[in-house]
Length: 312
Image 1 (cartoon, helix red, strand yellow):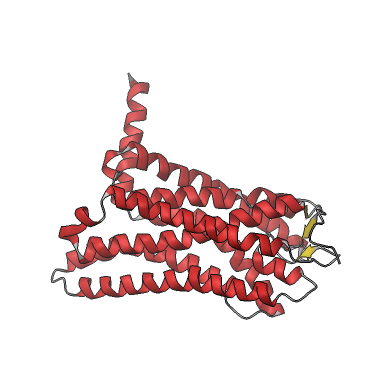
Image 2 (cartoon, helix red, strand yellow):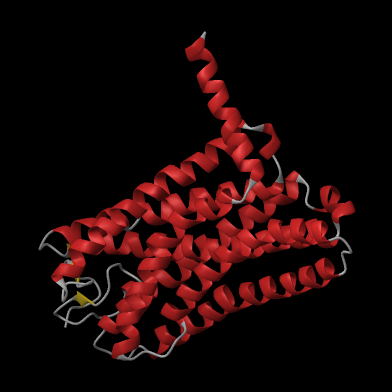
């Protein structure tokens, strides 16, 4: 057993029991990471350059895109290295940084998705007062609150997790340094850490998700009272993208953090963890752009500006 001050490396087992699967996952993760970089960067650029996207909704979407860029970059390079070669190690400091960043950004995304649900609630349920309620200053404050809560959560939970006495084999049965995996690595009583993780999961996952569901319950009631079919479709269209993102993100995170642990669930949890760490950041730009006329229009205007200097 290693004491808490040991700075030895950890071994990220990941999917090492399936070498063929590792090669396939390497290709999938590499493509997903490229899509994440291109898609989210494009959304950020469009949100900054196009004045028609200077609205609270796109301000929050650009925050989510920046968050996803940081989130995947904190783990994907290490993951690709582990999937491609036999070396599966990560230093203690590298694991600590990865844990801190993962906790902070994961928590921030949970809060930010709830903030975005509030934005959609006001836009549909109180459209005449939307500009007054969700003004730019409030949008900035809400986004800042989400980032601050994420930082505080990581500051609170990371040190107790890293102070655990880890077993001498130091094999983390996961592809990334996360709280559940590090708790399983400890050879002593982890009751305190498990209780702390359970409380944090309720506050960071269940409470925001409940607020999101309440918001969308009110939205559905408002939309159903709209007489015209075109009006209902337009209202549902403004919310469907965000609701899809929420469904993908929360379903995978809840599977990792809240479902009972057993060998089967643990193996399944790796794939769900991989999905929310790599899959959702790649899908989010597609979800927000494929059916979004405003983003498509902004992209067209950007291409037009790029072509004009070349033609001249």
